[in-house]
Image 1 (cartoon, rainbow, N blue to C red):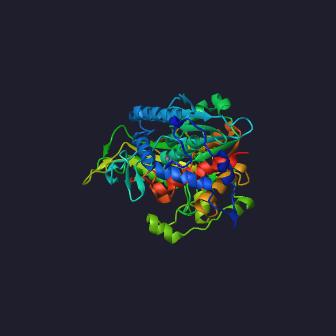
Image 2 (image 1 turned 90 degrees about the vertical axis):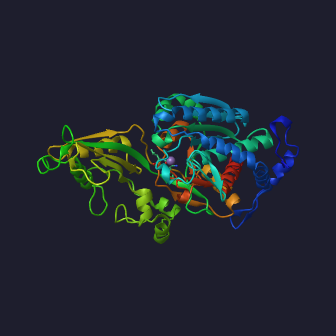
Image 3 (image 1 turned 180 degrees about the vertical axis):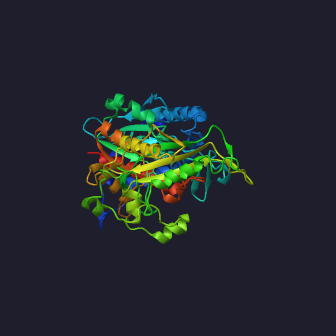
Length: 492
Ligand code: BES
Ligand code: MN
């Protein structure tokens, strides 16, 4: 049974178009939307096509599209080809935009005409590296379905969330032969390494990317049964810090007490950057930082369950600046984190050596008012000018960086998605912030010229960027349903 859905080959319009229109009348009880007959039809399609839906999702997940490691270049290109074919078959106009890095897929379907709004949707097909591989229960690029969850790298971030958008578009096209609004898709391949390629070509693509609204579908919610719209994300700037001291590794007996150990220098430098209360001590770091305004404080809840957090992650919520609440620290304050340290000997037993070199990988999360092009050099300069006597410090700033972004809770595109979420989840929509970053989106919003909504059905427990990343098939379905309904809600 296909309900109102028809294969392309049937080449026919929906027989009872009127009925669908009529069914779209929504009832509101206590502010929560009753599920409509339209929603029921969309659910039937998902149920009836489930095998094919999961099969295509798995195909998408099998591409090893790790953007940060050069040896995966071909896999990324294969993934682009697959997406292109998928979108071609749906009837989209597809372009592949080359960049200095990995290509961007741009696809559009604009048959709704100029009386209807244009929505630009952002996703990414690249994924994070998979190390440590031995901690995966099944291979990261061989997706499997276990207890209603799909395990694979990218299952959630961001192939899963990209896929349910495609599914929503595909279902509407099958049902109606057209879409309720004009849709543009921008699916990039370098989000996980900073989006430098897309950033460079954006100004050239301004005409293509023009839209009334931008939906960034790469975010999450706090609880599985409570949909959320993200009103704020943090920016990011990343760097490598290298300390060198000697020509070569030295014997720590012959040279200990004489030569300055680069690892000691690194420790010294990193501890210089913060005080005992978690505040970053680099002069100028907090200049221009904007605190939450009264309106924003009313829009989001900063309640945080410290015990649950500890139970879920084995982490006490003691990081960051001590004079702020947990979620203020996680959502609204900038950070400087060390993501990795290297140097010297760390094998079995011991080796008495003063290493010639020590390195650290550092990232700063940024909030409104902070410009990565200012904060990056500021931090680099601080470390370089505080090199302990006898050591050399060099900081390399990475190309991909991005600013913090805020969405307007009052914009029609936020309302359209909130309404869809409420209909699908049968509960009110939460408004949250995210601590994470999507580097390109401030620029993308400026270029498209429209209002932004940031959303997604990710959960902290999905293990994104970690072994055993997964996404629930229930959320794949809800993402698909919500997206389809939101597109319809945007129709004038
Ligand atoms: N989907 C995430 C962003 C995200 C993370 C949103 C957590 C909400 C909660 C995105 O793919 C991501 O991981 N971004 C990176 C960007 C970085 C590698 C430049 C990040 O935030 O670390
Ligand atoms: Mn990610």
